[in-house]
Length: 283
Length: 347
Image 1: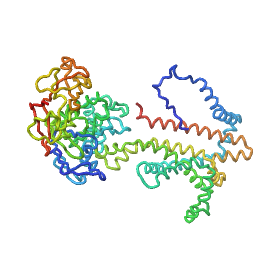
Image 2 (image 1 turned 30 degrees about the vertical axis):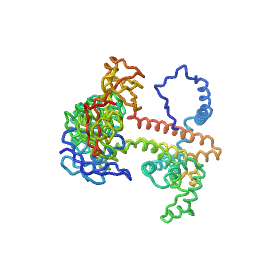
Image 3 (image 1 turned 180 degrees about the horizontal axis):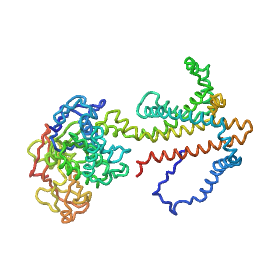
Image 4 (image 1 turned 120 degrees about the vertical axis):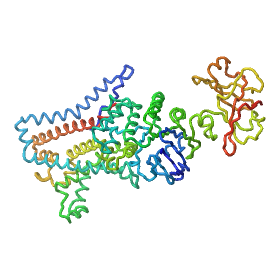
């Protein structure tokens, strides 16, 4: 998802370097086989229904509700992590404390943990009988098997994207820049808002966009922590699965196509964001 | 007026970074803090700026006791070695930063920024970002940003340290010219003696957290106060006091004897009190030639001769020549300097 063209434009391929023709053939075949062909197949299959049928399924009430739950919950989770992830990254980069290495490593847990395991853990902990579920139950808040459960699962899986996007940026920040601001008369608040925060906004947005895309695509943990009831907490990826279980291939491919298109658009958005964030770094 | 540093001590753990520093920097002058790394020069500069607080002692800036005044209220201009420009702001916005903090009216800021851009000769580049500028240009922007707030003192921490030799030389001259125009009391840290000599009115030589000597560039070079200054500023040969060269010296020598490489007379023929030596290596340094010589008692000394003399004498490696010091310097036990000139150095 993050692969960018980092080749050096000054580097000219000369005859002395090995030819890449054969390699290109392999790469293109491989990509066709595992990326382009399946995507094209999905789109062709869904478009073969005809525009009216496609539109009817894509905008059916159950589908709209599923998009609604998926996108808004994901957006909200990513936004919350935009703030919390930034704080965590800040603390991990700027402060030394016992157990820092362990916490730093644990950030990657959502990457490494099978999503079904995450769902299982969340469902257990946040259910009526679980430790946290009982605690929130006192205030009449039900988390597991509700839309809140979906939200918690999305929080869990999107956190590392923000932290890991921000950490290198924070590490690269020179402390001298803050000293320079202080010498020029800026107080702590002004230094934060005028000097520290502005260069962090693009990477925060990139992290949020990545986390958002990941949350929209999340299936394994949500399916376990939500009740998956339409119009309540059913997300679009689970809807695809439900359609398949009902042998409704047309419905599944249409929703799948919508999600694929969304993924492409968010990729484009993330790339534009990254370009924008480097606008003052061009040499 | 100017800067007064009184009895300043500063330690980092068990490391004594500043050890009883007393220093007066006169109003409107430009002073270099010169020393090897770890000598405390940067710590002293940061203490004057308020970026580091001294453990004890006083810092008085332009008549105001600033020891406990926060850095943001000291009204100092600080220039960092690696520029520390705000990368997300254009050159104009960088220079305007301190003025905006001070809530100056936008039209006055604009005027002031234009003025400063002209001063640093970057008028056309105001809307660029720092990454689009060369190192030398960035450092000039950093200087303009520091000067914009009309600081009481200008402090520069190894300002040319990150630049290549040619740009460094240009900027040195430029800084000197700029100071002649702006006249703000300035202190800069450097480990480059040439830079200190060229730019500063006065040089403060530091070593191991202490001030070794304060003086004009000529003073420091011609009358070094301590063996450290003698060997740190300019090149020098250090010879043991029991060397046969000094056996006729009337007083008892208690310290090593220091001889500058250009203070040797080299001849190809024996002439009175000359000492026979063999040329071990010849190095061309540009406008002069360095000759490494082995003396009879196996001591090695470095002598510098002009290119003209080198060609005239037709010197070759392994050749025997006759050398004689023209002057030498000793330091007595109380570290007072003593120069002996015209003494008979015969062996």
